[in-house]
Length: 295
Image 1: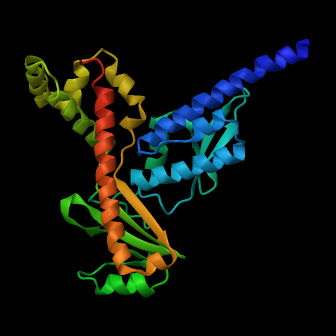
Image 2: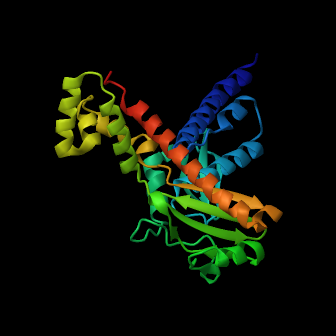
């Protein structure tokens, strides 16, 4: 083995480690949307960057479907990028322009997306998926939506309030019919719900009572973090779960399926069920993170 070969081996190893690290960071990010990333395993199997980029983009777009940030009118993509040090990072693109990198952390990424959002008074996005000219207010009854689903070209309904704190909207773009079911849920709310689950599951009743009493002044999450080590609050801010949560479920169908009123009804039911499941799973996952050090 020549010296040149040895030098090459030494310089290539950090790049491989960087790829594994950044793919894990990306997996942790999209996991907040209930997306299990295949990218780390594919990378370990030696697939090419083009294939990895396609998978990363698909997973990021699915995460946006579930985060419910109201940015579905934008094109999202994720691509591996080489750094100056010879390692790898993942660039998050919006309409083709790089806006953030995974290595910058979830807090920075969330802040980047936040400036693009347009939440209204009810916490619902005022951005449409389609241009304004396609948006209509959905009237009560099935007559209007039947015509839209079965006969219309591109269209989008404004948000409609449903039972159980849900909101829905429907749109067609080209040959694809889509529905979104949304229940506003900020990361702060999700963390508080998880903290409640953790506190109510504490076996030590005296300790549980102490946490409950403390929560009256600092909230459930504050009480829980106060019972852990001094840097718990700072450590929590580094977790993607502190900045991203599931608040939507988007389902799409194409072709003849997208022209059926019965299929549209089924889509709404399926999306509502998926959202319930995703939010329950998210609370359970957060509770597992927060419970560390209490048992």
